Length: 507
Ligand code: SF4
Image 1 (tube, helix red, strand yellow):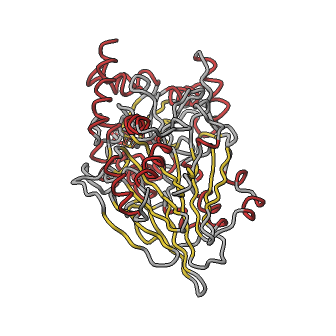
Image 2: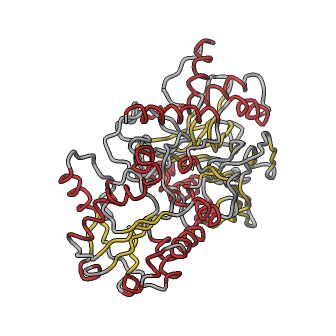
Image 3: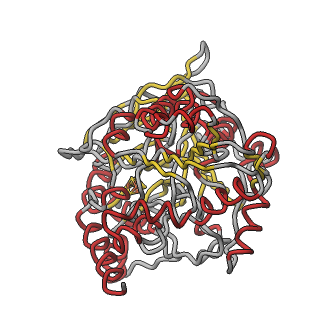
């Protein structure tokens, strides 16, 4: 979801924007709101700012409720008993604090469209690259928009195509030919049908599941399979790139491939960081990928051949993001895995604070080295990614100055992030990305320069080949754009090239 934003916080890690979840039940007397609650709470990691649900009642009405806050706060018992129906969809949103319209429910999802002729509700995860252009065309046709989000543009576009027809697969087929971007979406009609659609390149995950007992059949659609597990369902399969799946409470699942592409572009960051380890995406276990990423790093690590370092080494994860990969690394290296950094779970974000000293304090509030564990040791520090590098620098300084570590060897499971994401992930600009900026300034020497600036004694990143091997997919099946600067969408490639030339001209 695109929202104009004004950052007040450091984005230490790229942030996924949204989670979507839908459920339909063939028993008209059964309410699915409890399942929406359970599914959305399982997907809370993909969006923590607002939560919303739309419920379709057997009488052909849609009711929507959305508010700022985490799932348990928004969908409290009063709301769960008030919103009652056998079909529903839900959404968790991540949006940067300070974003335009941040507190208004108009900016939250599901987006409930009702123009007295057509009524539907839509929830989506992704970003529409050409939404400005579509909006301008629709403005010229007299359409009035109440927000500046791509969600509303998408809903208005679908609403205008749907005028005078009930052929929803055809409506979505036409809309998808006009939309350029990354999106996984669910649309619920007032008749209680759910349509799930994934863009032709399949940037964002989307899967379907079922739950059958002697009395009722339920179908689910979710951003990640962990949500289907949590509601007690069985994962049936992923929605394929370019496919529309119709989940009906009256019939079984029906599907249609509407757009075929000669490649796909599933976001590699789903495996590295975004998704829950207990999810399976496009047939691949996220936990197993992270474990293999750790194994690969250890296999390529030259310090393990140095007996002086190896005998004194411990493997320490940056909590929580470095844990799975550290387990794989420690196993392959034959070294002890030890939690050497204590995390305060109640500090969620690091404020942007001017000055080195204030930034240090901010990281210290969040992480504390355990001196008795790290003192005098060669700490092999595992993390999933380096974005700006400022937090990593502070963690290394803490381990050395406060923890007394002898040396810190930084190992990163994601290859260097050199380019921003324009596909719906909250990323800093190329200039703010430490690897992006230093690669332009120092060419092939940029890794040495990163090491110097963040203060580690050695540094090792995952290679792109090892990343794709760990995922078990080839480069034509994944989006690797933030690692390569080569964007699968042509409209976005131009934007990225423009940003690189601006940085070069400034340096
Ligand atoms: S650019 Fe990076 S974060 Fe964005 S979709 Fe591609 S792989 Fe994912």
